[in-house]
Image (cartoon, rainbow, N blue to C red; front, side):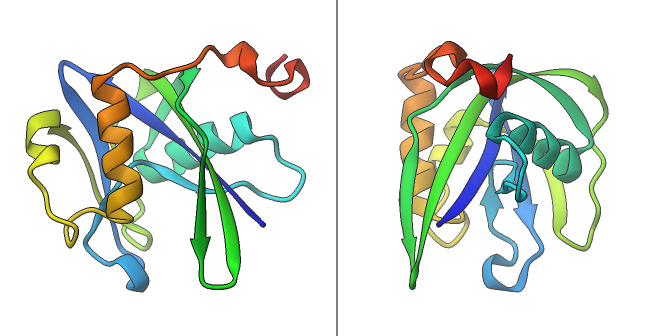
Length: 146
């Protein structure tokens, strides 16, 4: 099983998105996210991945529904947190992420499955953003964030 964590950051009806540079999903848009490292808690992983992919420091404010994805022979469990920017400026390492930018939610909804990575999973998150389907962080074990 692979644990993934990332952040959904919405500001003025725009969502921070990253354009992937990896071969398997080259040029597709995704929310900042990635693998939780061995021994790392999910919250720290989400904050770290967001910083690595965008250059922004964030504060987590909630948790979107947890998603399970089957990728070949692996099961991925994805934790996506609602977050606010608390510092930094957009800066990307061009090896993994080609670009990070704010995209209007309506424009994001118009993108095709070729433009958005894991389209069905990410489109569901777009709907969850619109419906404010976010849970408080204390739904998680206090050892994870306390």
